[in-house]
Image (cartoon, rainbow, N blue to C red; front, side):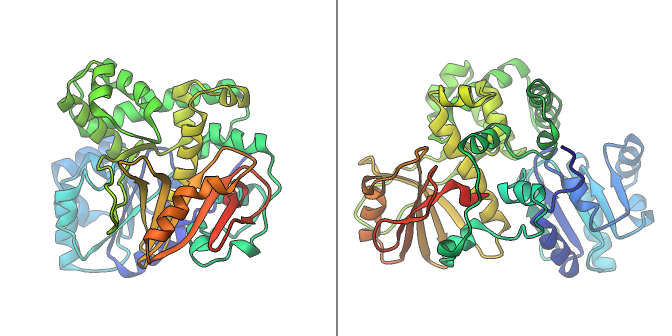
Length: 413
């Protein structure tokens, strides 16, 4: 199967931002499609992977910025963070919206000091691996990729949604494949294995070395592999550092670097003004279920079904979809998890406009009222509770009381 270009949800965000800001910064992991997407908006393209461009900008940034044709895409901007100061000088001298589209494979934490200098002049956008809608709308020649699952849930549109006819095996196949664009083009399982192996060694390791201190690559890779068994769990740093054979300071450095290159995400706990004690530690997720499955050695439906990690992998898969929806929505949307010291748990809490959605994830084709028990308890405690959902592997949208619904995972497609 051949793919030319996926219709990306973020394209309209970039186009709109270029109309209102002189500088747009698009960040995301390597191979998520930043350069391809950027090229849809601006023709003039310069990458700092080009040694000549790198040396020119490094040697005389002022002359470099003054002489390049604008508007321009400057790719791999994290290689020369000092160029931000020169761009600020140019923008302040001659402010023209849409002059610079900057792309980089490390998140804005890397550029914090330099980005702060462009406050009021720069729009910050993050691109993640393909969402299920981007993948399946492309395969079905459907141009409408702008449907957002969180918008659908908040706006009560789900009763009228058409559920796509997707088999259980196809859902699990997508869990194992993940969302990186190049992986969608590969039919051979062997080649997919090679791609993920090469991605980790060629891109993740390289990016981590580029932006931070990495003295022992072997220990970093060992920690990264061990970390895969912790996705969708509250991170116990003491246990992880012991298993990886590294001290806490080194572990914190490794985790920060992986977060900066968009491989992991820390989800904060939800707390509310109710009489409960909440856990304080954050929950760890891999940002792509394909990378996670590769590290766990899951390459087939049989592997997945037989794995003790299948529940955590499936939750990670759903998390990645919710994260993309939250990041791509035009409405400010916050994502949390819920857990009390009394072991009441809800996988995801979504907050928008002071309204709360609660979401549980079940790798099951059947649902009972008992699956809503913690959501029902939360509903009783919160005045701003809107709706509760259990995502499951069944066929139909089913009510389980007022504002409580079982939602097929197929709706995400």
